[in-house]
Length: 258
Picture 1 (cartoon, helix red, strand yellow):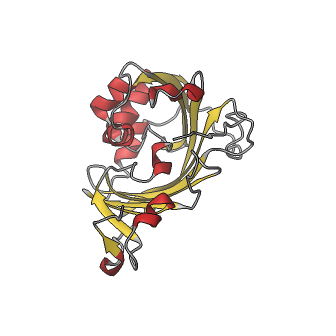
Picture 2 (cartoon, one colour; picture 1 turned 120 degrees about the vertical axis):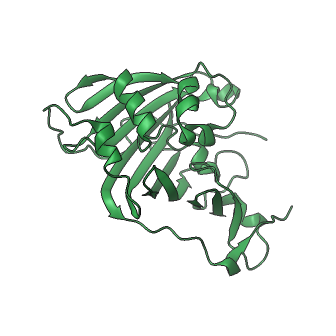
């Protein structure tokens, strides 16, 4: 497969700046997050990912979605993703969508659409939280929506007002984060390091997360040498009423055509 990936020119291009954050001491982020874990409530997010060092002015992938909470954490999500340009020769940039409820996932769009039987628009498979469509693989691999993950980011980060900056390894995330494990799958190195900058709002809730890690930790591809995957995610609408439902059964299949 011949790769024709276009790299992005810088990391600051992703999204418009947030309003100035108060420099006053932030409330306890983990306690603030746990208070949001209520059935039928959730949060929206948008993210943009890129390979730093590109000649393209657009991110490689943009995603937006909504996450639904239960009393213990994430119970469902609905995420849409779009590539700005083909990832490899023959790859389509048609929008992709993944709905996840518990242990089940429904995938639609993108390259998958060409393999769906006539009259079907969704493919049902097992849940992988953040992954499923190709765009998800290049989405945010760190989730501050998980109490254990958020606690680790706060603990490891050097705090300045409402911002925490630090590093965390793939290995540590795999131990504590279902989101990371099910997004990244099998990585080349558990010792790989993610650098992060986390901002919280006046309530202590995550509002922005920027992460970066070496692209070669995902795959040993020559054109990825010394390239860094940078993802910037915004979290909005905390406490939004969320009710994610599965697609109509008449549009769903569990088999793909060759």
